[in-house]
Image 1: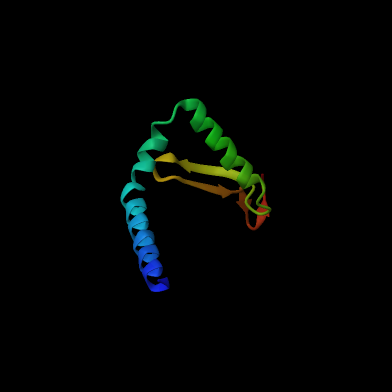
Image 2: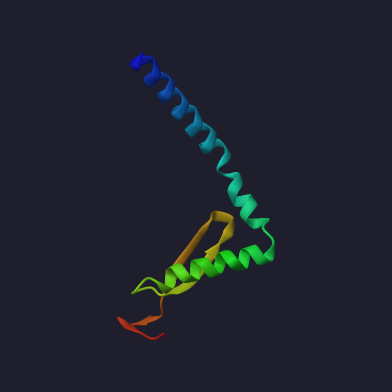
Length: 82
């Protein structure tokens, strides 16, 4: 009984992971098609996340098409200019 349950569980997990990996690239298109208000809200959340980082407190780059953002700061010879 336990072996059968294990096999069913493993099969279900495997199939659900396949489904996620197939459908995940479409999220990038969905991000680009968000209304401007939602995109701005998302950027605000990214900015908040960057401001929590002690050494890279500024939001530098946002690529909604790739679901990426980069935090950073202005530096000159190891000194913060920002």
